[in-house]
Length: 272
Ligand SMILES: [Zn+2]
Image 1 (tube, protein in one colour):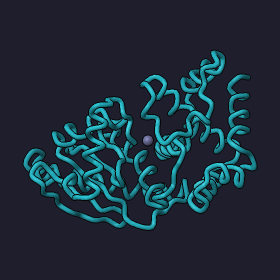
Image 2 (cartoon, rainbow, N blue to C red; image 1 turned 135 degrees about the horizontal axis):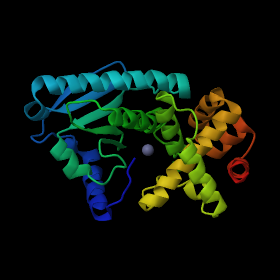
Image 3 (cartoon, helix red, strand yellow; image 1 turned 45 degrees about the horizontal axis):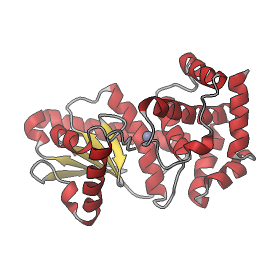
């Protein structure tokens, strides 16, 4: 999702992106041409100019690798979150120069971001581990959006699910010792966010240190729910969210508790 660290550029890009919904102008490569390719669950558009900069074979290998990673992540999405979006997810691979000019500083990650219905990726020739992580993370945002475009997911839940899924698919199931001590320290100092404060649409308004804690708390609450109630219940939560469109009602139905109660249980744990 957008991080919004550079407000001037952020506003300019929003105008640009807003204009794009009425015209296909944004989805242009450096010279306005994109190659289209489809896999079972994705439509991938790639700036044809990447062929010149990355070399035909390097570029095709990258594109092929991306779709393999995304299809693998899609399967995990079904098994870990019970999510199977009803239509294909759009992915655009940009010439790196175009990507940096358009999105630099706007996304939390420098390699990719999800915005305006599309997973947007900085063109490269190699699929490195960092990109694999980002693709898993952004896929959760994209899948929730595609599953129910009208859904307003509170940031703690949207980011918590994305962070948890990203970690889970790489084999990390729990808070690391360092993450736990950071949270325990923040709890002792009374510096934790109330989860109500994290129910905005994004964490874009937060300075980077606060944002880091906000993302960690988001992950921590999902990790707590899974540890106490199992992964199956998390899929039930996602299902309820998509069916009802109401995060609070969904929490109540699945965990028999509201956000305030769940927060209290997590904070108690961090303070013992
Ligand atoms: Zn995110």
